[in-house]
Image 1: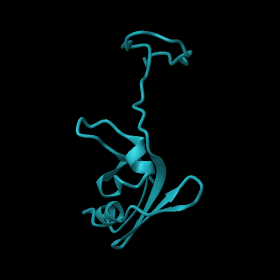
Image 2 (image 1 turned 30 degrees about the vertical axis):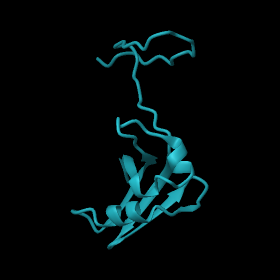
Image 3 (image 1 turned 180 degrees about the horizontal axis):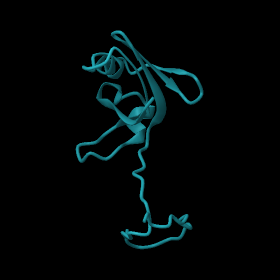
Length: 107
């Protein structure tokens, strides 16, 4: 039997907690995007239907082995040295070469 899922009410606490009655989802600070991969090319499109630049990331996704065509739903983020996503380098495009794509779904 699956555990009953209850919405978590917002409340301020001093320490993080873990509870089997709750499902936690990792939050990234990035740009939500759809990656359209088609025979050696990749286009990243935002929720507002704007094309995102990230040339190195698009090239990496386009070269992904095992597929010629795919649509991935995910988020473009920049990680710091500790593996934590940082929004400011992404916003200022200073981290454009370091951007990675966290895929949530393969459509």
